[in-house]
Image (cartoon, rainbow, N blue to C red; front, side):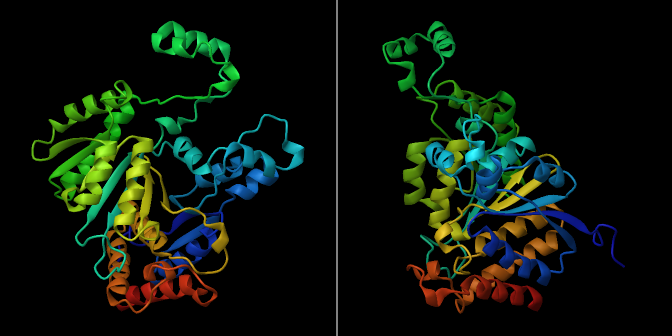
Length: 388
């Protein structure tokens, strides 16, 4: 007899986004169907198209829809520099003070998805593995830091006056014209630092990882990275069986390449976490193998870490494994542990067999002959799910 939990029908926000988002999302649906995941998928408008024609890449209707769902699956997003975004905006919206901002960053802030978890595992048989036995996970603070979006250009005089008054180091910029100064604020709060560090330690405790590595730059960024370091040291005392390793972002990048198996759980603020998770992803084959989860207290948005790769959009060429592994993370979040395990095992089995490969797994550029590879890979994984 099935439990009430087992029989639940979920509501999942289905956010394809831009470029190859549609391709990898459709591929993941083959695996979700194979796993017999009982869900209603509700499509949501999000991405570059809606910036261009509506002046908002994250429409209010999408956020309201998401509030009625259990979780969201997200494909890929296109983000371009300010000048390019302004050029592509519908003329009727120009001159109205609109400014493009990444909708995935907006979702993280709107739903307070403070934890970004990015596992990077080297699956046996993957010809792109830098080294065997790599099993890393990056915990990246998701709502603050340099991604807070508090920026100025040109620098308003009243902001300059306040900065000069409160920090004498700003005086060296007094002779620079305000229109020649751009400022981004790195904002870290004690609560967010505590939250992301604790998430890393709790994961290490649950999965018997012996260390948590803090990745910051407190010798230079004394206040923002310093706050993270101080809070990490306090929290580490609550976990006497787990060692806190303190590293600087630049040195850690070097050590990750040299000895990636020395690390298990890494914790970082927003931008540093973004950097090291891409580096860690390449160690296990690239972004085509790297899933991620944006987690709040009650809600989660699940996305692969790769971009929208517009030149491949609609060609069914790209690697869907990151997206499929992302669905496994969603299963775990929803409490569907058995389904999560089956998906990951199926991915591992297809990679180990090596019979089905996308172009990136052969370390070459995509060609016309590779069309359909996305679906072929998804079908192979779906078959392995059904065989379990």
